[in-house]
Length: 151
Image (cartoon, rainbow, N blue to C red; front, side):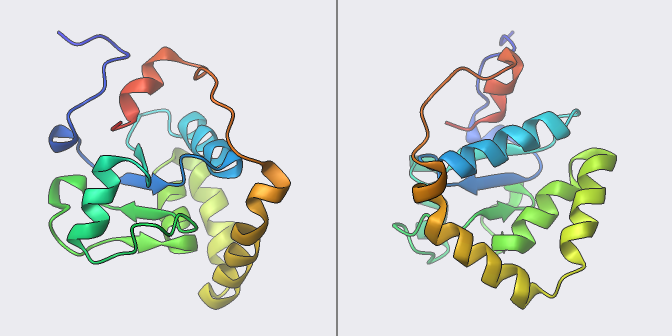
């Protein structure tokens, strides 16, 4: 039987998967916040630069070198369908998977029109490396979180 820090096979991963910039300090912090909020472990994660996310991007004709956009695939088991959410819609959907606190945060974000939210998202995306820098790898706070990453 696999241990708590064993990663699942991508094909066996149920539920939503968030594709994110694995080299971005801000993006990694957002992922770690989602890990803390999602106590039941519904969300899984994959860096956009990794082979699993790259295969998904190619399959759906999405840019393979644009790492400024978070993409949430609502049902990884049906990833062959062109069903995904980008930017703030992806963030809101991911937060909704994370219990009461996540749903409250999602409601606060979703109050704003998508056009405004995404304009702010793009502005932050342009500045994120200057403000937060690249990610400096460090161990996850909980060993069991390792299995939530597809690679």
